[in-house]
Image 1: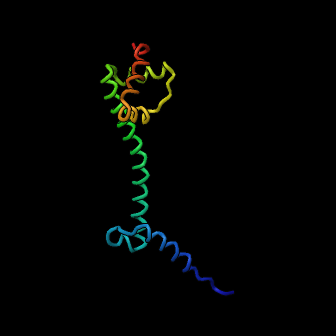
Image 2 (image 1 turned 90 degrees about the horizontal axis):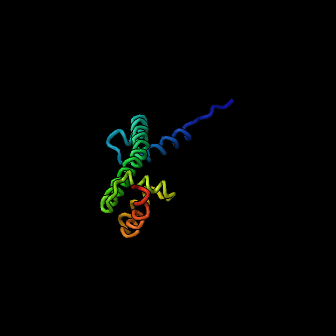
Image 3 (image 1 turned 90 degrees about the vertical axis):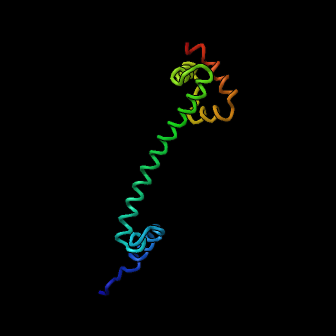
Length: 118
């Protein structure tokens, strides 16, 4: 029986990984074993970073909403509670955008919920 040489598939896999590590420093970009370790670590950090980004942006949205609420003599907690009791379904991202782009509409929303908040 003839021998099967597997170099082609391995080389393809190695080249694909080394292409992803282009720009890394030293052996991390051109030695497969080092590049693989570095890439796995980089991908883990990227995954964690995507989760942290969501968390940080939510905090930013809340800060912006709170600042807009203070201009309307409310605080964030009263505002969110008033929205829930008034059955207004808007996420924090849209509320924050509204506070920046269209403050008049945000003020109308605050007036709508003010009786429910007090």
